[in-house]
Image (cartoon, rainbow, N blue to C red; front, side, top):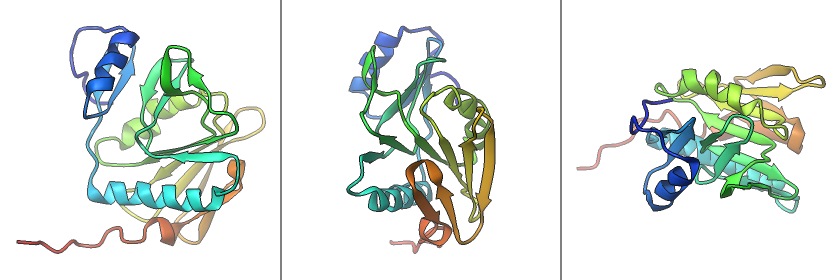
Length: 194
């Protein structure tokens, strides 16, 4: 998590009002608003490839794939944030205080970056684990072809599954992610246009 955008504490209602008029996205926790890092073209490509792959597989099923525009609210901790991709199956549920804050994702995906990797693996995952509906948390490496899936097991433990090639299953939604498809176009050196 980045440094707070401002040092003064704000209410959740004030955060929502600021977010409505903002062109950039911010996280909210414990009265603090945090700037979210801007994404690189590679980051956007990886998130888009994941969203497309899941959307294609879930077509015609009662699940929706959302891009990073959709706010997730962790009711148990108060975190409001924007994962790179989220999947909700069945009835969409929103927070009582935030009509745009989804509270029942079944899968959350974060594309890692230099500035967010420690947070995504650490504190953010600590918050996400408190979402009762969440079954799988997916981390997509920004450095190398690697997809990690943390899956909630019976009893609540989170089990890590990894893939550097082939595909990896998202059992909670009956989908799989092909490593090659997710990384298609990534790590290519762009041509400079003058």
